[in-house]
Amino acid sequence: MKILVLGAGVVGTAAAYYLARDGHEVTVVERHEAAARGTSYSNAGLVSPGDATAWASPAALKTFLRALYDKDLGIKVRLRPDPYFLLWSLRFLAQCTAARCRANTDVKLRLALYSRDCINALTEETAIGYDERRKGILYFFRSKESLAHGAETYRYLAERGLPIEIVDPDRLVELEPGLAGARHRIAGGVYSPLDQTGDSRRFVEQLSAYCSARLGVRFMFGTDVQGLDIDGEVVRAVRTSAGPVAGDAVVIAMGPESGLLGRRYRIDLPVYPVKGYTVTMPIEDETHAPTMGGADEDQLMAYSRLGGRIRLAATAEFAGFDRSHRPEDFAKLLRTGRELFPGAFDERKAEFWAGLRPMMPNSVPVIGRARYKNLYLDTGHGHVGWTMAAGSGKLLADLVAQRRPEIDPKGLTYEFQ
Ligand SMILES: Cc1cc2nc3c(=O)[nH]c(=O)nc-3n(C[C@H](O)[C@H](O)[C@H](O)COP(=O)(O)OP(=O)(O)OC[C@H]3O[C@@H](n4cnc5c(N)ncnc54)[C@H](O)[C@@H]3O)c2cc1C
Image (cartoon, rainbow, N blue to C red; front, side):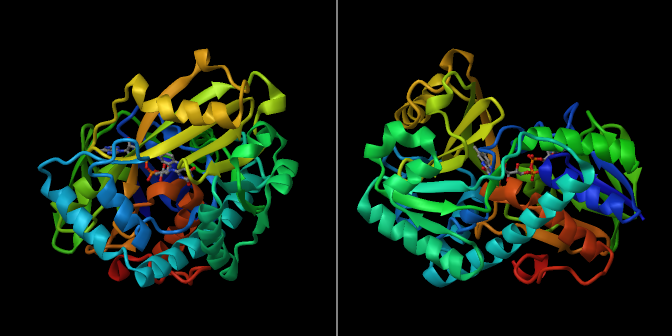
């Protein structure tokens, strides 16, 4: 089949790889001049089934409401007259029960664990490099209360297949000597040994180059998707800035923009952009630098070690499609980074970035056929798209081929959302 993949982020590129490996003739349409110039450009770098817990939870309900007035929170809500945001919020709030949180987490963890196997196999097969580290990830807490609550959440994931170790501060510093200078701030944490880290931009750049050189995938860069030509139950072509492009099947993988396209064709695709910030800096002092990825759960900051660089990431901000950033957006991020890794990085060479998580109200991506006979979705991966991209691409390819998927797709496909 001739398959058009819309979007060359980590999700679209991984899908293109698996579809092309199945023998399809794949064309990727991307508005930027290169791959990974959207959200996949500079995320926190964690490939982390340990982060599979759904955002919508009874605790998130309180945080979401607090965010309306508390300006120093890692979660920020800018109220705007946007009916789509209002609708998204109502659907998010409906997912904030303990039962829905557990159900959504189960689905995400299933996909995230599978995806970890998929990315490892893909890396081996293609021999691409992306500053990957397979040393595990540390999730740590500053107070005994938050540690007790967090450990409970991780035990839930452990019962469902995520290996973990609950660690006290001594063991934590033994695992991560870079945190020695911050030992007094930390009450304990959770070590997830099979979680890993890597640079998603480099992954996408390498994988897209591999796909075009080895699998014959065609990338139409600098080409804007403008609409779909639909004839009854079938999408005939994608309308683009370079003219119509016909295909036998179309995959929407446009990250935060997916919902904008879907809505025009009566597809219920409530993907909403949730802004986050990252800063990437060269390591100056190895003795205080992290050797693996981690998350300061009380400060809501994640970090990873990418080759000779450190990346810090934080904030969930509801600000529409605004991707701008100001120096003050990074103040807390840098302060927390200095507290944890004093003197480790060179702030004068910092690269600042803001991007938009493509977030579904239930935090679960949607993968598979939707509404039209030959239209597929692979989108809505929210805060863990780097973690789930490979598994999502493989699952999508299995569904397109009408093969039995290697994991149960229940909860992930369009009908179940
Ligand atoms: C601050 C931050 C930290 C994060 N940390 C992590 C992490 O540690 N681990 C993790 O797993 N995930 C993380 N994420 C989430 C992860 O980065 C995303 O889920 C993932 O990158 C989404 O990939 P995507 O391919 O769906 O979207 P994108 O990377 O945005 O790709 C979509 C592509 O579609 C293109 N496109 C859009 N509209 C059009 C159009 N009209 N025509 C043509 N092309 C179009 C865009 O240009 C873009 O290239 C983080 C996100 C943020 C913001």
